[in-house]
Amino acid sequence: MDILALDFMIRAMIAAVFTGLAAPVVGTYLVQRRLALMGDGIGHVAVTGVALGLLTNTSPTWTAVVVAILGAVLIEVIREQGHANGDVALALLFYGGIAGGVLITGLAGQSAARLQEFLFGSITTISPDDVWVTMALSATVILLGVGLAPQLFAVAQDQEFAQVAGLNIRAYNVLVAVLAAVTVTVAMRTVGLLLVSALMIVPVAAAQQLTRSFRTTLLAAMAIGVSASFGGLMVSALALDVAPGPTIVLLALAGFVLTWPVGMWLRRRRRQQLPFDEIEPLAHDEIEEHPHEHGENCGHPAVPHGDHVDYVHDGHRHAPHGVHYDEH
Amino acid sequence: MLNETPGDRTVLEVENGSVAISGRPILRHIDVRIERGEFVALMGANGSGKSTLVRTMTGLRKPVGGTVRIFGSDLADFDDWHRIGFVPQRSTAGGGVPVSVWEVVSSGRLTRRRLLRPLMRKDRQAIMDALDVVGLADRSRDGITTLSGGQQQRVLIARALAGDPELFFLDEPTAGVDLPNQQALAQALATLKDRGATVVLVAHELGPMAPLVDRAIVMRDGRIAYDGPPLADHEVHGPLFGASHNHHHHPAPASRDHAPHVASPLDRTSDGEGR
Image: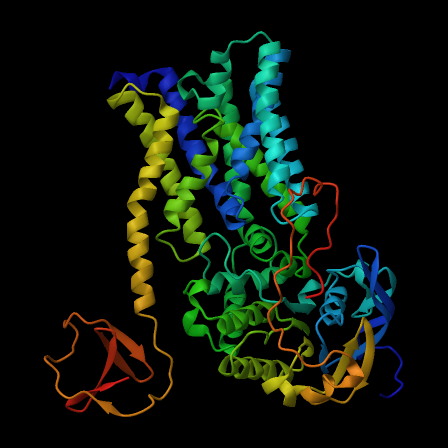
């Protein structure tokens, strides 16, 4: 267990916890707006930012933040001005970002290995300064994302209603874009730019299998995100000699694989128990004889129907009526 | 109508309003005054401009000419948004994330909440009351997508109600809603009327809401063709007002070509108007 006491490992654990909490907050709003791939797009654009940092010998984190914010705001402008998704225009931006990044890295005379650190993450080489930046930016994202949840939720849910409610929808839309950009650059050290979107989106996808409200989805996604990023780091450090970034993402995906069947079952059960419409049956159809008595444990689902329950039996609806059953 | 001075009783006033979408004139010569406590039905055929007019009254669309005054102040300077309740055309009740009925209705309370404050007891009370009025209090914890279309529409009315507004705008609340739900809607609107609210209702057909209406405004081709006592549904769709009655309750999907919309960042498209 000595490895856990090493400085670089402590820094990695702090970074994992903060990014694991922050990324799903933004991810929830992106999923709600059906922009799940926006994080990916910003990640691609941020590659150019990293390369500019390498070229100019400044901190790649800060140049990535700046370029990612510019890219995110540009995506938001495209979304607002054009069609609801304008996805071709977005694709142009993504590929421009990654091609520009690779090209500029070459110009800077840096090897592909240096860029690789940012593409796939290298949480164990994070410097003390970077840890402070990660903590500060993640805390900002969490505070704004959770604190302004009612407003951000309303804007994402129904933009026109939010506008007539007096909310400045453009400001909130840009805020989400900027938060997404900041999250991408923060998580870049943890899981890498190419996998960053996974840490934002996969915990939300896993959480929403089991939840019924926005608030619980947000909180559950944060819990899953932090478990995956901390757990993934532990697995890669203690058990297997593998890179932490992909381990974190695969662990989050495992969470989805576990919750998905449960979610399917829950949704199916909820549909089955939906009350039948309160409409008088067409006729009083008696069932001639019935092999058993329906009850709490007869194995046939009991579904509310007006003032009584119908038992669903081989595609029929049996309603108890005195000593016999009626077809409803 | 009596020739009153525009004073306390006027809640909304459009003077010589005109609206253009992508440079194309849509509404022309619009003069409307709505008094406190009135229940006004804004009617007309598809494409007659009734939705555009309501969007102009709520500030979603800026007029290119004329003035819109709401509670005595110009719409551009208006910021008492808690006095307005808006029920948009039902569009996206479900986003990508599960949302409960309670959460949708509570976002109607935002007009009265300050930033970064939790829901107070007064807010919860207002949300519960709003759900009671539309008869869905027992569904508050359910996911919005488990509700039928008509019930979702009632949730949107509850959302507008939660902010305790004085003036309601409803854009086609009964489109595609079955009769029992239309009756439930009419009941909720009757409660609003009894409480003294002013209601502007866009409707293609009034159905069970007909007895509530005090005044009808009929739009035809972007102009007001009639303003007076309520009309029966068949009169509105008579030859005087243009298009005959057709059953286009659901907006036809907008046609799009399959060319990539590369120009979209620079090209401002008309945002799906004229439904």
